Length: 399
Ligand code: C5P
Image 1 (cartoon, protein in one colour):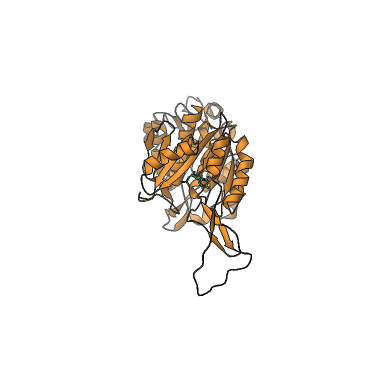
Image 2: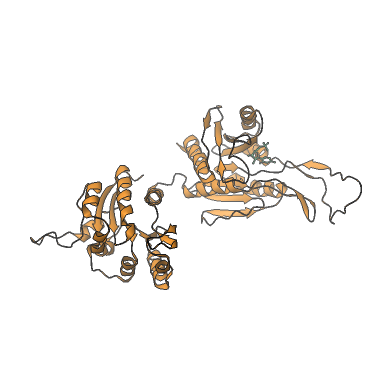
């Protein structure tokens, strides 16, 4: 995604300037043409020779090249760049950027730029917290610049807190996702997540341990690829702030079914990751059931199989992904389920795998398609697993 891009890397005077060397290496490795502009005070922290060698281009600091009067054209540099990345951004450079001060080449390039600008603050925790710094950061964001958030950790002063410049890998990740072309723009998606609660009486229910993490991660991943997502979620503590995701909260399987029936006809992609209760109490007691000496029998009725019902309604052009959480004969059961529920793809996670399953932040999956082709993935964070699932959907349905 970054290959062939042209980036001006601004380096200002901060102890974090050493990280610029690693950042340049990563960018060059990704195929980026990097031109480094240093502020005069950045020279106290790292030599231009290091950064010129790594970027394979001369490093610029002065407006004028030498005594010949030839100038380093800041306007040209500002126009040449696909992005300007200022990492580290010291408190001083930040303040100058937010007030239009132009007393060095980097600030002149910043003011001349038409490309997106990313800034990665690096400073001591109290400097970062200071209202003037916070107001400068807000101003830059409001003008459309992109903040690369500073992280928490040990600072050069020895204090511990927020203010460490983001790691070079995180900066590259942010640039990568900025430049990646969304693959599902214009598509509509339905995702189910979380458990369902089937009421026994006003205070008790039948439920399960699903946290909703996997479904929320899938919704985020679809939204990052440009899809408009309706997320039907059972009771969960998960939240999302993505503007492309609309959450419809439900409690029981019946409510989830009704919400899905409404949304499904217009969904191009449906991912059913909810752990829907298979049974509900046949009748709900309106009063709290009193304890007695004898055993209590609760008659259970089947809940609607949302997946199977949607599978019957599926039309050409609609793509359904189901989940299977199995404890035995995993593959055979998952393959049967693809057919019985008319899925296009099934994500299998086994409770026998360490690190996979309910409540935790990681998962280990296999993805199986209609031709019974199996792709196995290693143990990953649920967000990475969600990206793998969405990539598989893109490959199968839209490649
Ligand atoms: O039959 P089983 O519960 O193993 O099927 C799992 C798949 O079916 C998951 O995708 C799950 O979200 C979905 N499902 C559903 N409604 C049910 C039961 C399961 O949508 N009542």
